[in-house]
Amino acid sequence: MKAIRLVGYTFGGLSAVYAGYYTVLYLTRWEWQRALISAALLIVIEIFLATVLLLTRLTRLEERLEQSDARVEEVRKRLEQTRDPVPNHFNWLRSNDLTDVNGSRTFVFVPVLMAAGAALSGIALVLQKVAGATARPGAERRLAGRLAALTAPPLTATAPLEDQPAVPPARTGRKALAVAVAVAGLVLVPLLWSALADATQTRAEKAPDAASTTMVFRVETRGDRSPQAVQLAAQDLWETCRRSTAAANGDTALNRMDGGVYTGVIRPALPSHDVMRLRGCLQDANTNRTSAVVLGEEQAEHRD
Image (cartoon, rainbow, N blue to C red; front, top):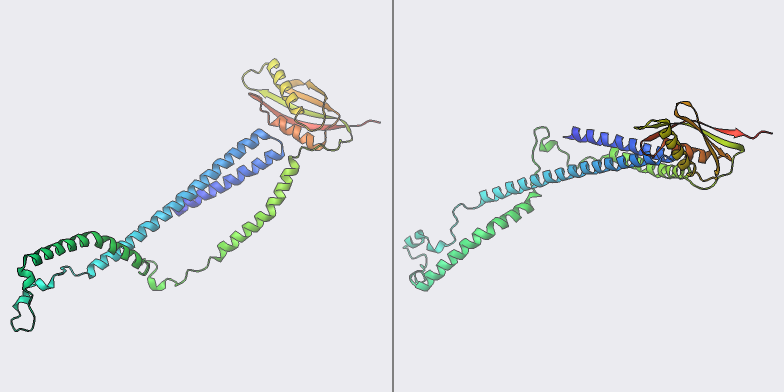
């Protein structure tokens, strides 16, 4: 069982790291559709790990309750063994008391002969039986539950009672690992947060010293692969992605080449961050049944 849990935790942890890494990577590349898919996968993995953890804790809790009930039942049985098997609550009615003829005892004949005494004795007997039948099991169970904490732990074949330490050893390795993970998290989280915020910022940047930006990409469609369908998909994708940049790009052109390859030109040239956003938008094509691959980009230098 422990091996299965270890495999589950290992698989889930590695999958979570893998999905989280690609979520951040796609965000920095401005590939939003892929980032959403990776984030959804990360949430599913987190739910899986939380479910496994809850089931493990519930199983341990159930085992502890079963062990506690077993120990309480064992103590209750010991209490029953110490009780007189034949209680005699009316000793004054015992027949051997009436055989003492030496005058050393004072016999109680009046309550026995009187009807009132017999009736009271019968009522007292009924009350005693009812009280014993209703109060004894609950009282003994509560007493056994209190005494269970004072009983010795169950013996095992591999670890006798005299070999068990009085105080469990301190788990210094686990505490050191927890402290190291906490320190690493405090150091890495601000760095990752700053890097992600810088990669996904939308503020305007200084224009580069270039005349234009050229983006070469290939467009593929599924289903209808006619030149007209590919041209329409490329035009739609280009118009959508060029408007995703922060810099002004009113002067654009899209030229078709062989093999479904297109060349997009934007004037004036885009800053480096906008080039990354444009490339990510093209590769993360969300048009229906259309995919694109960026083959390269270039900044055209000013000519004197």
